[in-house]
Amino acid sequence: MKAINYWLISCAHAAELIDKRHTVGLSVTDGIRLKIHSRICIVCLRYGQQQKWIDDALKLMRDREPNPDRVEAVKKRILEAVGNA
Image (cartoon, rainbow, N blue to C red; front, side):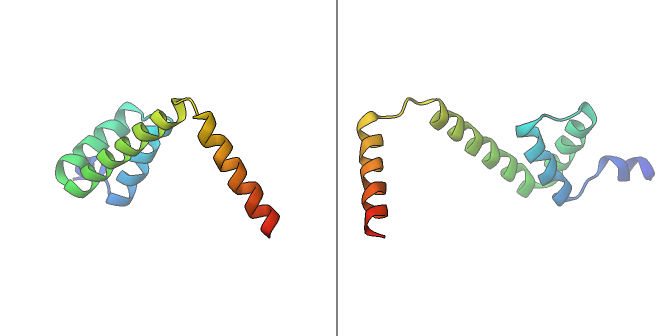
């Protein structure tokens, strides 16, 4: 019974592992524990999929070259807002 308790994790722990997986990576053991949990819990599976989608979108945004016209427009709006404050 102790072995089963070792491999089964709570949703809170699964969420921590999902976040950790996208930042620093997981050990083999933690990866297996998360995979087992994700097979059982559809909510955590969906959370992991959403987290990956968000991370991929942020990477795309970060890697894009900024549009110079948009940058200038934002600068102008900031300066106007500061000037009116």
